[in-house]
Length: 479
Image (cartoon, rainbow, N blue to C red; front, side, top):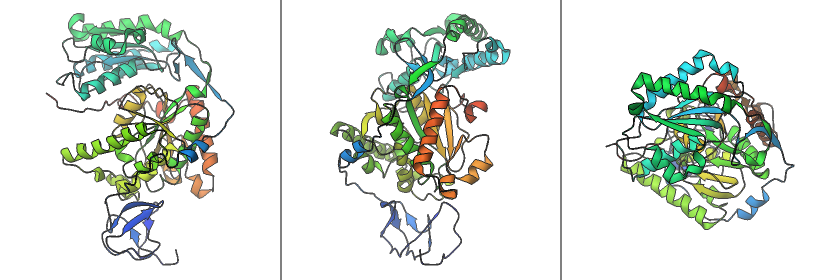
């Protein structure tokens, strides 16, 4: 930059290229990430001590870059993976039996039943069954039956029970709770209910009797669920959930843009890439709006941003509550900066659709789903929407996994990849250390997605992660 550093600066952090007067905007990637709270000299470390959160670019030029975005869709030779074809046209990448608690009161019985079956060795005789997963949660009652929180939980439970990666599901309730399976069938239609069954603790004779009943039903289902083979399936059937967590200053220049390249390639193959974490695109939404496919998509995204501003204010918070302390140690100063890197996961193609949390994703291409930034809650919504694989980038490190959709974890830097080798599937640090191109790295990520979709075990699966990361978004009063 032509100026000596004023102090030593850690990797992933920022230094000023020129003088910035107090109150002037601080730019990164050509976008505002904050304003100088004090005078900043060339060579100074730019971070929380001299750069503060502020308003950002609201010049929403909807569709201004749509032509370029359409041109960014690559023309690729069709590709395939080895997946499970379900009746009705669904295509899965895994084959689980799901136990779904309708209410927290039944969380213990499904967890106990799943643990007893998994630890018994019974599944050894059924090689095509990936396991028994218990979707337990902390709500299901004490909620407004006509409220958004109820609708969200209903969509999450139904989306997991009828997920492409689930061969059969058992809903387990207490019996008297607000969340009732009969109402779900009425809302979503019984046509999709052929793979699930239901029982309640009150009708089954209590806790121990219900555990026994669940186990007996699973034993009955195992031969049928096992009776499926992987076959060639088009990559166009894949819905890929894009996630990042434990981000650092390298996220926006290595792993996230590389995942963006992979997202573009999947879109070129006819598949779907789902960007989420609404608070973590705050300050970068204008970049997405410039490639919105139509005004309706743009209007829904803008309304969503406004809702989040009101939601955080109502709860005494700020959109700049994020970045986390770990993000800041890794070099991220404001949410505006973090969002610019996070949005890079979405690549360059048109934004074709907007979805509410856990809504079924049906439109191919690059789409957006409204979710919190908290990784387990966000991924739960994406998976409920039908994502069969998750790609999760991280710079500080993450011990995240998910079921029934497997998670591929991507490190942003060499140091993390070396320090957490059993957790990371791909290293994007070599983009900086070895000069690997984003194009090559994106292709590597897509290859891994297709391999995992075909049954390759991810690091998080090998570690047994995913049972505790099912966290539906709780919105509304607890009554």
